[in-house]
Length: 166
Image 1 (cartoon, one colour):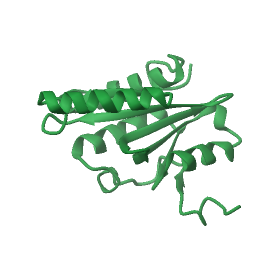
Image 2 (cartoon, one colour):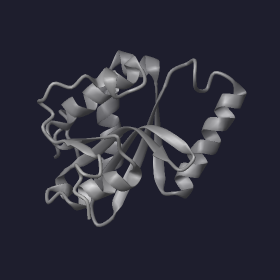
Image 3 (cartoon, one colour):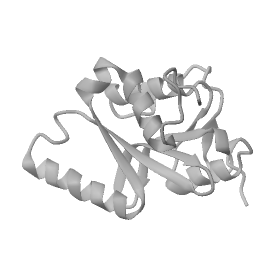
Image 4 (tube, helix red, strand yellow):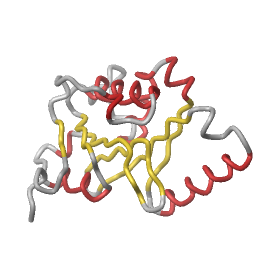
């Protein structure tokens, strides 16, 4: 089996490194959300770049600390869709959360967009992937609150107000 590096999977475990979030996301609100996730995660969030759902799972399986971590990856293709962020925790089995950062120009502005988003959410639910949506305005107002909310939804509320595991 190829190593993670040989497979082209970049894993950033040290979030203190300089990270230009704008280079690995598609919008300023996504960059703000990613920076907030890494800050709120306080070293327990592992960023997996250029990922697929399988590579995120593989990173977790190879990580001896996996029970104490949240794995996150921006712009992950999942079936016919792409998640702005795919978050995963690994307990006995993996649990996934697709986070969508919805700018008003791209989501929920028209009935057609709402229908498309609803179909997409149903597809994810059928694959046991929860979906969480944040409006761009909400992320801009308080990206850290959004990040804490997403992590709590994924891990079942076991992270404290400061983002650290309780």
